[in-house]
Amino acid sequence: MADPVSALKFAKQSLKSDGTCMIIEPMANDNIEDNLNLVGKIYYSASSIICVPNSLADNGIALGAQAGEEKIKEIAKKAGFTKFRRSSQTPFNIVYEAKI
Image (cartoon, rainbow, N blue to C red; front, side):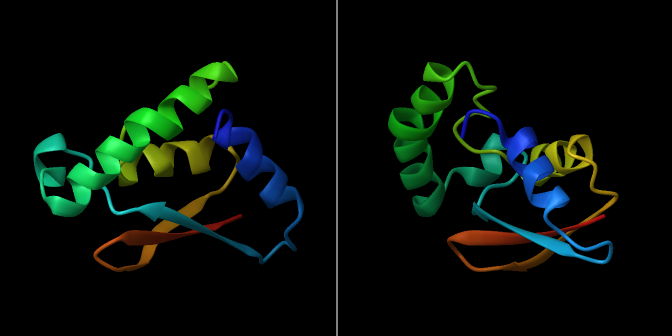
């Protein structure tokens, strides 16, 4: 995604005042060392050939091969969300909850 901040701003404007935006991301930690497992290696590979080039082609911010929780939280805050938390996770995905 080239512009995740604008995408979240659009989602935010679509919510009621007490609404929640659920953000589903690949399982990734903030530290590279914590992602050096089978799932992380698969996600780094796919992101390096699909996600990053796609974002750069649209003059996007290219979050990197794996964006950890702190980066996603930063983007949600830039989009105007005031509350952010990890809601759930599996070995493959993390679900974040962003509230106005």
